[in-house]
Length: 178
Image (tube, rainbow, N blue to C red):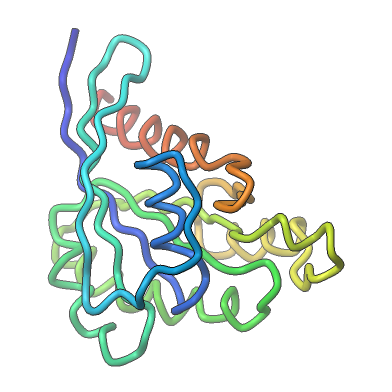
């Protein structure tokens, strides 16, 4: 069995649910009472994809503007990323280009393609009429910036949480074994 270690960055505006998503994935439980991430937090998860064992190093970046300048330094050496937005907050998707410009500083330095998965969080809010961003719109918007896929998820219900990390894991594995 082959072993891989992938560094993956999770970024997006503050309050979109990045830390909640990671903690749901790591622990399998939902908690609402997380403190705002200051700078960056780091998590590790071991997963199996096909015949490969993968250590995912998940870097959770604070979404507030004062922390954006830290991001390029942490992206260096990353194998992939997740841009997360909140389906009930249009501005969180519209800031994608700003975030990608920050990421590009590090990517240019690395001179490598960084696959980024678009993730729409809080999809459970659709059931109570709070969806603002239609999935098709987000998909087209993500394609404009070469994001390789879109997955909507809910940390609250657990819907597609595992799929988010398996999808980015599979993409990083595919690139590393080409």
